[in-house]
Picture 1: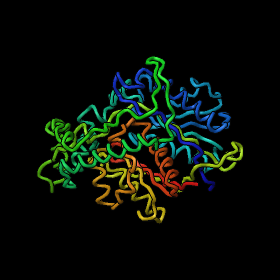
Picture 2: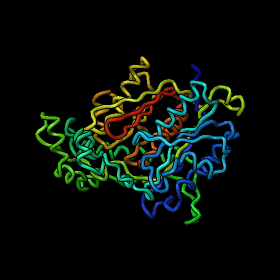
Picture 3: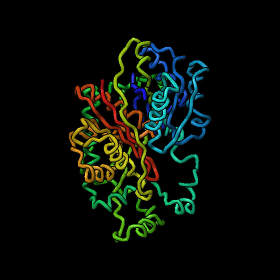
Picture 4: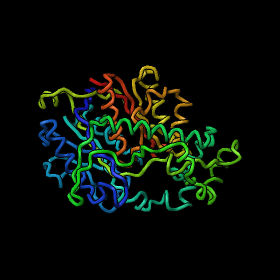
Amino acid sequence: MPDAFIYDAIRTPRGRAKPDGGLHELSPFELLKPLYQALVERNNLDPGLVGDVLLGCVTQYSEQAGNIAKSSLLYAGWPSSVSGMTVTRFCSSGLDAISVAAMKVMVGQEQATVGGGVEMMSRVPMMSDQAAIFSDPTTAIAARVLLMGSGADLIASLQGASRTAVDSVALMSQQRATIARDEGRFTSIIPIYNPHKDSWISQDECIRPHTTLDSLAQLPVSFADIGAAGADAVQLAQYPQLTAIEHVHTAGNSPAMADAASLTLIGNRALGEQLGRAPKAVIRAMVNASDEPLQVLSGCIVATQKLLQRSGLHVDDIDLFEIHEAFAATIIKLQNELDIPTDKLNVNGGVIAMGHPLGATGAIMMGTLIDELTRRELKRGIVATSGAAGSGTAILIELL
């Protein structure tokens, strides 16, 4: 089967998902348009060569409804011959968009594709589509699908993770992201002009560089009320070894909500010859996996395990891991089960610090991994994300 190569991976900065965030006034169409333009200009790309564009988007509602992938292409002025499809696997959507885009190249269906994602959480808030699986308790309990924060507290309880332990994960994320931002390590960022504010946004806005363990310890827990309303009882019935659910997650050790978009240009070897440039990386393996739905967020762990086993590799064979900080306890469980060294894991911080624009996050993480492998002159890396209901996605790449 032919290889799928990554020729470029770009993204917007992450804006705070608030009315005063740097990207808030931009529609998803306005946010994606400069990324499409940058992909063309940076790669001397004839967009007519692209057969399909796959975008992850979780809350496909209001401005993000109507197949944002295809409609944003038309808005950006790309040829009408380019197809577009919007995909969702909860918070793994952006990484799954890359997987589907890569598969189209691998099977010879397309010479070039684009995978990425978009989520404007300040304009289309999470769960504003009122999906029954999250809004109707009867449906949720029957499907054993709880909200993400409840799953995070369950994971913390099962791991015996204290408040200090989860806060320490968050602090490291903030410290590493601050260093990476200040040193200009996120070279995949495309600055975005917001004409409504007459300002350029060129850096991630959610990072809180003055965070300390003391400041994190002052924050109230976020999900105890949901637990008392019935989530704890559902979880304890499934896990009788627990006598209580320890509620340790707060706004400080949970992913920050953000606005952002991301695009990854994928193609076969012939595309590089037409572009007159070498690819950045090659995709070696891709997997999807699912874990216990009540844990909600552990999919990135089982997906990473599955990818390593399928590839015949060990943690020692991987230079860098970019793993979804789907609440701090997920990272604790990941390291307990896979023993990934801290100096290989999320070395430039993660979504707790930088923000989690749901459908765009996975593709952003791919760009971040390529940035850092290139900077360190390393070879092999894994990106893995968690979606809701225990779902997960992982991709293995090698730098060229």
